[in-house]
Image (cartoon, rainbow, N blue to C red):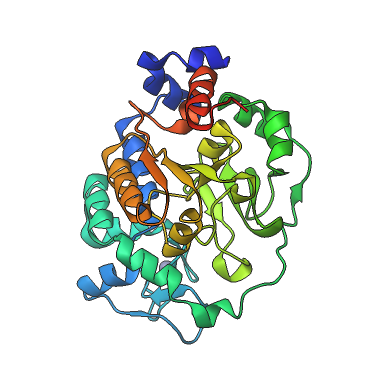
Length: 342
Ligand SMILES: [Zn+2]
């Protein structure tokens, strides 16, 4: 798979999606992907409140960051169905019910995936997201001071992980070394994932992980906030490799594709902490995905930064995402923004 093939834009999307998932993408798959993408901002409690469904946010058996409600799949007399408010995963401590909150919504509404998407959008908003991520001063004091990468992770590029990076158009060894990645084999919570450390001021502050099989329910799983010095939404990925001018992208794959002086907000919504980090740059270029919602957010980010940054520009792609850009397109972009390729 050469980069040359990738840079032929007209047929990029179908080709790329095949490449990403290893199989032709059906409507259902793309719908699920879209829901998973939106799920991060879904306000579970607000949704359950609107349906008059009772749940507990604290108490016996309820861990921090979880809620417990009566299980919808077994004759649970109590609150054994746990939902993680951050990752949106759920499982019952009594029966085998397990998955993401998508299943819970479908069970409650008896509805289709398309309706799930509109509900997830309805009960999701950036304001709530920013508020919950930013109003935790008290909680911050309980933060970790050191971060441990998963016990099962290895500083060795496994064949499957190598193949995954190759399929995405990268030089695997180069990316693995440059971004200090590690691999997890077939065992444990982080199985079949690439571990992606986040550094800020040369310090490991948290990490994320990318499923390499294309089969995981949640492609990116982050280290939880309470086990991080900074969460993935309290820093900008790759910030230590950015100076004066920054190209802001959505995710780590995009950032790897563009290279130095490119940082990721980890999603199309940003927190005020991220806004304040970006406002310290001289020039900011936003390069989000081509789809409408991403572009609306990019415009808003431009607007919010314009009062404090000398030069802000939203760079719009014709289609797809920066992670799918060909080598020539990246060179062209870097030349335009930085006046040189590297
Ligand atoms: Zn159950």
